[in-house]
Image (tube, rainbow, N blue to C red):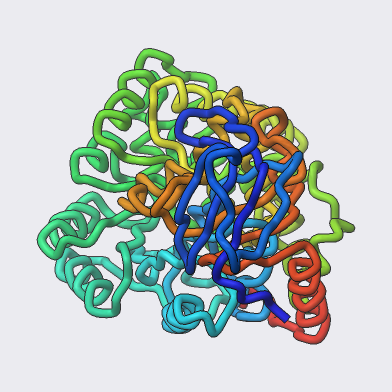
Length: 469
């Protein structure tokens, strides 16, 4: 049974101030309803009568985490509780569907335990779409003309999407039409940097975020004009198209990494920072794609995913992404992954807003769990633990325009919090040492979280899911 106490006091806890990257020891945090009522030194804040007291001695309190690039399994018994059990209280869902809007309604009303949802439109792609031959049930929108591009934006707005998701095969003309219509209707657009569109043009058109790092190689090469033209010529030519696209793009990226221009990269990244655009690198996905040798097919987190997902993941890694690689291409992909980490470090040095995101459901990337892996990879790239933590807390809140009400442990903000048994500023892996989660003011202690995980495992074991669902 979920504890629904609405008045909670966490006493003698170390509050992690994610804005300033510091620890505030021996604090008391009072939660009334779904809001943080008071935060301050324990000797200055008495606990009012009627509050449930949680002893935070020796523990650390952080804001709820955000996964800013998420896809779902389609099963409400899997994703919402699995995210909450891992301290993920906000998600940006990158492929909108009607049932996600229903999940959001039920989570907001308290009917369903789950995070706060930011939901994209169905993805908008050009022809031939990378998803044309893929076994997916989700609807995507085609924008082969400027009229189709504008119609896709209007539909996204009418259906209540929070932003328009742009994809890889859009032409410069359709991408520009989306940008102009989105500005007219006051709806953001974000997603992939299309193959034929320059990063400079996308920045100037107001694209709010750029997902993954596939296009950053060609854009930062001293041969950028030649490589950008090569990207524009990529034509997926066998089924599934996505596999073909990856094979061709990997060769271009290898050439790009070997012609990298630090000067050009610095100039572009300065423009990104000045425009306030964000990058969501999804390094944990790139590790699966480029370092499949790091994948453990016996990973116990697979127990939390439905039925045939394990064989689907094996297919994705062994066939879809990397199955056609030669030994030389395998070596190149491993080098490319190290280069990805260097790109993240360069983005950070330039002051570009980084968002933690995972691209779950794309092969050995797990809802909730993998966000902690992403933070660890940010630290491996050179970010401090404090800065990595910001990419999953205050930076997403700022990006979403919600930093006045979430993203830090401050009075008046929503009570989405994670109580840890260890200090995440000392070691970022300590974000996994979860003692309790407070979601919308509702306290979920360790026993309750374990119950949620047990429920997910049971649901996963009893629910076969067709490949690609």
